[in-house]
Length: 245
Image (tube, rainbow, N blue to C red; front, side, top):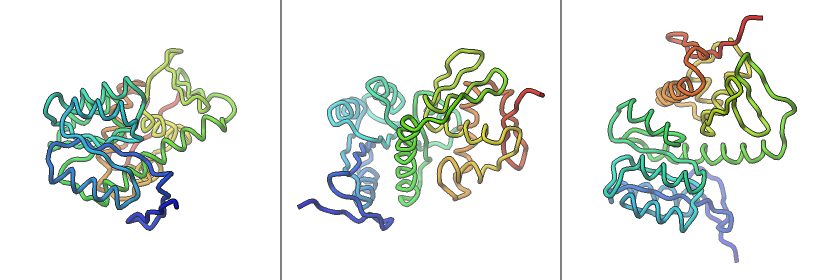
């Protein structure tokens, strides 16, 4: 008989449909706590305590998502992220012990989709895991139910069907999170969206503590599509600039 697990969020998940999460962390107390919370949410969980073990486990087990610490023995989480993403695209939630924006931007640059700074609440971590997996599902659905046409805003092109972005005709590689963030801004060009609005629409997360995540993703996105294309409205949020008519 197929088992049914009831997660802490009240949602039932059948064992046959459980998503796989690989937790990579060398602190035994932290990894055990994360694994216990995610299992309570209905996920299958495996753990790894160093860089080489993480890459090997990811290749053999094919997880649906990685929760990945930056500081690891063997080689660090950034190198793990590079190697795993080279095998196959997989959403990555990075954990960092330092509240250092440079580290965060580097992590986003090597393919991480989101990050959290220690210490963090297990409730928020579980919520972000659910959000990342929903984003992957939405991307897969969009690929099979494409919207017609390509959105062109000057030299910026957004292809919803293929989830591709081009600037001056050249492809720009965006993570799934960056793509969704760009689309959210592009849906109302020149309109200012608050950090809280972006957090709610892109991350499905309504807690103001996550607004720095928005800022870091905006910076990463600017590096890829051009800083001049996203305007900061200080104390409010961001707007996507478009050529004057």
